[in-house]
Image 1 (cartoon, rainbow, N blue to C red):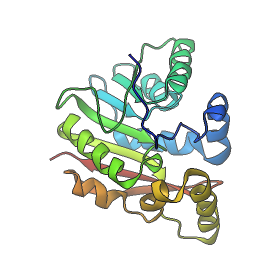
Image 2 (cartoon, helix red, strand yellow):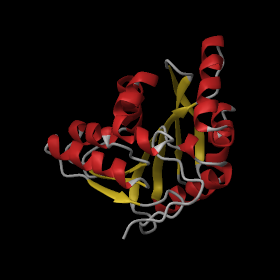
Image 3 (cartoon, rainbow, N blue to C red):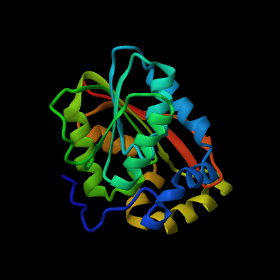
Length: 219
């Protein structure tokens, strides 16, 4: 059964009609390969780990993770059935077995302590504050003790080019969902949601703004 989308749900690229060009859009507005490869480096993936790609979009991160470490058990979750279809086809073309589930980040359909790693790229800026908080609580719940969250998302602009790019991000994705991202508050929210050692690990300048890489851990 398909998941009912809430009234404030934002598709992968804000508007449903843009879903077919999701990959082109991401490549054009971010240094996708650079920041996603750095995120995978940061996560220290290894065979035998159970990994969730939260807000998996068209599946690029999950596919790259599985290609890098075939012994991973990785699955993706997204609330957009159209983008899940893209992800399934991408994994099939790559000859990889990756499960992609339809669901909402703040109502994860997984048991407690199911994952060693939760990855997320360019997803948290789609959520208003209350949904960010609920999502982080769910991430904490499904991580095993010592498990880690690794996030790449729009971060706090510091240079003039980054600030100009952030204006476009705010206008396209909305002020409320992007506000905490662009204020650099994600680590604070991760800590408030029950995670520890939350901090920014890296920054990647992009055509629009800056992509910050964060990590946090379940105690």
